[in-house]
Amino acid sequence: MEKAILLGMTFGLQRRREAEESLEELKELTLSAGGEVVLTLLQHRDRPDSKYLLGEGKVEEVAALLETLSPEVVIFDNRLSPSQQRNLERRWNVKVVDRTQLILDIFAQRAKSREGKLQVELAQLLFLLPRLTGKGTSLSRLGGGIGTRGPGEKKLEYERRSLRDQIVRIKNELKELSLRRSRTRENRRKSPLPVVCLAGYTSAGKSSLFNLLTREGALVSSRLFSTLDPLTRLVNLPSGLPFLLSDTVGFIRNLPIELVEAFKSTLDEILCADLILHVVDYSSPQAKEQAESVRSILAEISAGQVPLLQINNKIDLIDSGSSLLEKNSGERPEEVFLSVKEKLGVEDLLRSLDRMLFGNFKLYRFTLEHSKENILSSVEKKGFIVRKTAVPQGWAVEVYLKYEDMLQFFPKFTGKGD
Image 1 (cartoon, one colour):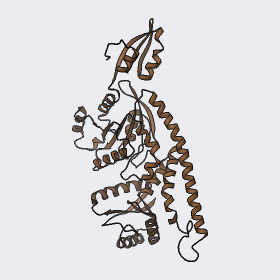
Image 2 (spheres, helix red, strand yellow; image 1 turned 90 degrees about the vertical axis):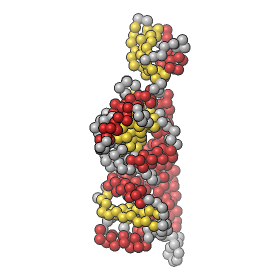
Image 3 (cartoon, one colour; image 1 turned 30 degrees about the vertical axis):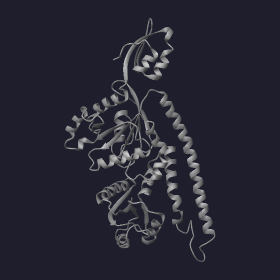
Image 4 (tube, helix red, strand yellow; image 1 turned 180 degrees about the vertical axis):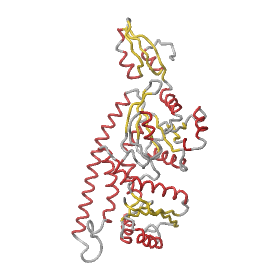
């Protein structure tokens, strides 16, 4: 377990409270990566220092702390430029990483599927490419004076070319995998099965809710980014109507742009959803800010138009939790309050899902003569057959359909269904 010092910076009018919350999240990220936080520091400046990001005095202060605490790594909550990272490592003689590198490291540990691993590798290469000159004389000997030109420059260009070739190769492979996923999604669209995607701040309880609804054994952990590769399972509501449920990667504030780009094919699952279940840790003091971060990322990937139901989870950790359940009665139809752990409010969630996914479906009962059996296959593509029983005249059918589809199959139909 690596010992780590965490450093955060605020500039100008940036609020200190936001920086402190972000640093607390950085601590959780460090623990998720297997590190041990020995000290957390926060500095405010009017503007960032171009050489070190933090001021000269703070650089000296940290240097003295390094002598005392002997950490293996210093982690910045802010994004460092390649030159700032290089200058700090030379000054402190210790490994220096920023928030983006830390998240990439966690993603590399968590990815299991071929696509997930490729996406992480692509994000790492995109991050590394502009930083090649910061890797020391082993990759670059560029500079002024005798002994700094020639072979070193050639090796640097070779390394850059090699990275670009790897990036192209991975993008092509991801494109093929994305095409396969697109074909799978197209097949889903041909089916009447609605698709519901779980989204939310990491550790809000998405995987726990997924397990509760699907009775699956997906990994549940308090560590950030426990789930990376999306899972999709069939769920049957108490009414008997089914839908597909997908779990997705957890979101955080300031998600690195490399990851937004690299994980677009995974996040594309959300774009094809009929409904997003936005899971919020309602017990968190930062619940509002975290919810806004998720909505911001959803808008960034053009998923802002997908219908959304906010799931306020972990109300068992709130004193007023029982009174919040009363709001599920319809006072706030765009939100559901529940505790996945204690299984409180789950029935209200299922009712909301039934209403939002199948509000236009009705249960119809009719008998098809043998001469019209060919209609059954079309009915199955548009609705959900609950029961199909052979009778002397043909088939007695019970099916959930939209009223307009029922009229398409039976133009003379005048009933309304159950």
